[in-house]
Image: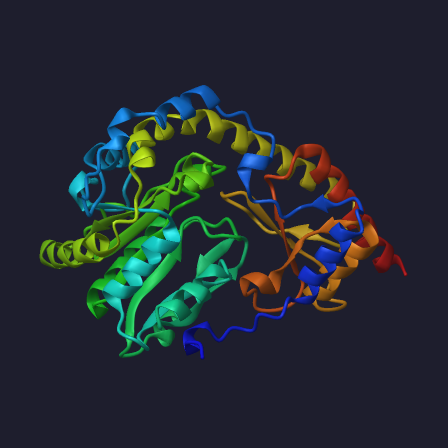
Length: 394
């Protein structure tokens, strides 16, 4: 009755069931997974945001496949303040506006892949990719990120995963949840490989502005290989509800011209962007400085608190994080990560994500959000470590 592409296992996992029961019972909850910035106590300029959405020009319908020019120019101006890995910057004509990075991925999957073609994706990484691949009849093939005093791409894993059906390599810069950036030498090697093998680079940069050690280069404008760079207001301006994202296309001239022509047909088929948010985009991007400063301060404060509490015990350690708003903890492997997460919820009222949600290679990893309000984060972490240290002492 239904398409095979939607043949997912829809049975709730044990952690989801336990969380529903916990909330239904009205128990206290220290949610260390929260990722929605609009509910985390940050102060937005409400007046400026709402005024930006009241532009009378929104009453006029302009069916422009790439999106309204003022919005694309604002996105191009955003990239003018970033250093590219390679290339000559970003032009508004290379930009396509979408309602989300999920939609952007779907455009690119359709552009690059016939049914059954392959895209290489990092592991660990965000679990959304599999659903998008299923819906677009694309096969995902993992390549490894390895940890050795910091995260790095495993190019041996990447090259051995390539096949005649490979159509592109997806990178998340910085990665979610590892918080690791692609290094300049990795970006150069990746571009050379993709150019040689007729692959596309698909670079997800939604967390790019949240580097903890200063700014980092962008793939936008990369002219060494066909490259599609994704981002949007959801993370840049902490406004996920505004539904504004984009694709920046770049690469060798002939390939780029063909890609843009085909993308324009795809975008024109859907015309999914709405006028009010497009017209508000220049102002919403202007708002990013205020909210990003608050988020980075929250992330740094919670990391400092995590390091303080971890310094008082020897059971757990956190892995290096360079950006984004998540942290990964290495924990004792005494049961599966999901069993541990359920136990922490039942006994300590602390909700964390097990590593297998993000395709970590083994048990022994928990993922925590650094967006969590400081007091809640402090107490939730204390309870979690108290439980783990008590078990270690038994």
